[in-house]
Image (cartoon, rainbow, N blue to C red; front, side, top):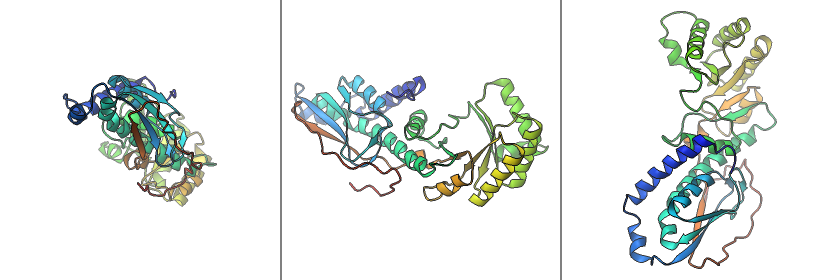
Length: 321
């Protein structure tokens, strides 16, 4: 299991699994399987990738299997590149239990693997540039830690987890200050935050080069007061100019590009020289990865599938069922 699946992710996964099983089984169970499948009947299920992608979510599947009393044998690991027809894991146990839990297992695996796969596509497109692809807070409520884990399986970089671990001053925060220059407002907020709690970083959003110039002057005069500037919705040419100004005046300041980043625009953004690119799409609109679960009554039945060609992470072809 990758070290990325830390104690926080595990704790959140336990909670998410509890809620997912409750909404599907309703405290009653799978009444269809209970009414039609003998309790003594045992079976095997093979989880198989039906398209190319990156795997994420096996630790969550293991939690579900443990809760259900099923045996799960992993044939690969989170972060692995999957070709179509790759065998991911085998589940064994009572046939009715397999039926009762297959959808919950697949729901987590397809969602999280979809996040990992989409992140990997963006990461591949910025290869050989200095830019890191970062996640955002645009996640499914209650699943943020798991989705951020999944994007890291795809090679993305962790941004702030929530509102509690880093300072990001956006336009609405700046506008709420009664008076003072942008530099004064940033300085005041940074000092106040650091006086009360540890913060991972202090960042400020700008949408104009004049605002950036003011922050560059602040950082040049007071190194360490600001760690990063978010460049909001700037075209690549403007981003490149922002990088040029930063390099000349405050080379230690990180620059992050943000705003509607797509697969067809991320390369040009990265080539501007920015350090980070935040991409909401890797969590809020990533297509689910198509994974199937093939059931068999005979535990000795071999359901291994033929291998497929290597996956191309830059592929954006739509899924065909």
